[in-house]
Image 1 (cartoon, rainbow, N blue to C red):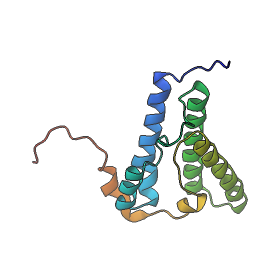
Image 2 (image 1 turned 135 degrees about the vertical axis):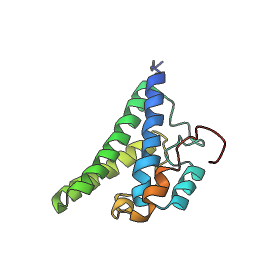
Image 3 (image 1 turned 120 degrees about the horizontal axis):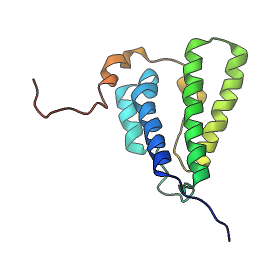
Image 4 (image 1 turned 90 degrees about the horizontal axis):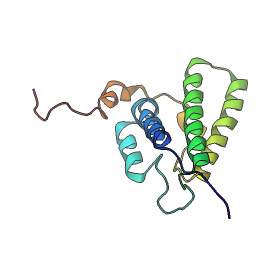
Length: 139
């Protein structure tokens, strides 16, 4: 018999927050609005429903949070630095964290190369996409 601890409510909220940050600030830099909508439809960064891999254990929750934070950190660092040596190490680390996410049952079907070019056209329109409206009336 093996004893495991389930993830806490705060961890699940943090994972949801990190996923939201990916959709609100990371993906719009690299993908078009229609691509991002497609990502939502196919369940990118959502637990794989067909797999029992993501069991919401304490360890899995920490693993998912860490992987998401590292991926965001690498992408943020990539914007600021243009070093080929760093890119090689970053690419390895990026791919390793994608593998860990997929092992935890979180669907992330990308490679480092998908984030190699910033998509400037998505800018302002995507910033407004996920904002909840305060009322239902158009002014």
